[in-house]
Length: 497
Image 1 (cartoon, rainbow, N blue to C red):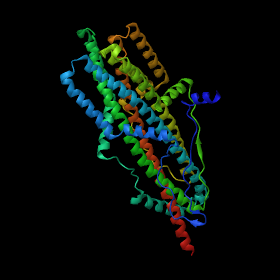
Image 2: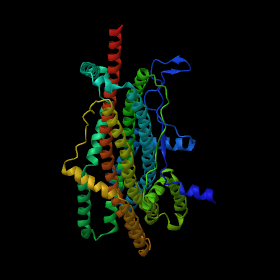
Image 3: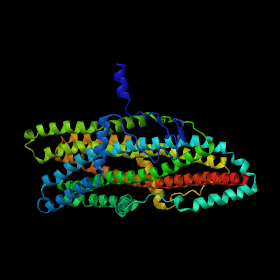
């Protein structure tokens, strides 16, 4: 019984994450090593085959072929709608497709975010692991003694500046290709506050003309079709941009870890230090009970349990088709179910994105603080920190909107709205109008949250790129310093000889 309860309680628990940077030995088994033995960043492979398979499926969901396949499907639907668009069944069909696509991609997006969190925390642990070794070995260099000699100090500054200006010490991280830059630009357009405002203007215009249509089912279906098409596009776009940015981040980490490994290796050559890098454990974050419940739900969705439930529901839906004579009301059932769950997932996704980002940002701040201590210990000034521009009204409003949308209370409020919609549809005996009540508002709300998700992703990605550039700059400065110390000591040794 205890084991069963442990299994039930495991989802939602963000446990400790540990990491250790590969030690750059200069000697092993009596043999000298003339270059770093592990360069670049190597993502960790998950031990379970099922997890690896699920991760592969998630990566494919963000691939270009899937993205363009969905775009092609949307275009085909729009063109065929010229002939069939006036029928209720045709509009209900896009609603069903959207709800199912959104439901499935919700699970993929949740898993993407959970994987990104584990990756970022592991990276932070490995960087902190190497910082501990850097600190130990920089202390052994006794640079305070050299800094007290004005002549040695001036010569060291000159040598370091020469190293820093050399082509090999360019502070440029890898850049995206033109297509990637175009997609990133479009991501900022789609997630811009103006786009959000335009979206709600369209919704209010639709509401305003409702009395002209008598608030009919047809009037509801038109908005349902429009928001459904928009959401299908967003759900194809968001995984693609996340996978693209993840690949770019990986290339940047690869460059940073190469410099960091070289820095460690040079320090070991100078100091004769051959001690293994320490394992760093990042403790589990403390969260409230409500947040833990949200994480619990997200973990279940991220393991694709939700997709299994959807498949069961679809089997039941198909089985009852003959009873309802496969009419428009029957077609709406699966869309209603998937739409309501998808709406809840939209709230959860935004909360998950913000909370996990906060945890990762705390570790980045720790790394920056530790780097500051490293520079202080060797009497060097930290490189000028690049910061993201967030002074405009648009950024301030966007940040405030993101914080509100990501709050735990907002997730709870979203769940209560779903309960109210179900109660309303039940009072209408789940007629087409009742089911549209559970389709149109959730579709509008989820579309909004998906745009906000893009806004949050853009903000996080912009900050991440700045953090990576600052980290790279600091590692290059430290490496130039260590190379300068080595050159200065070689010069002093030659003079004594």
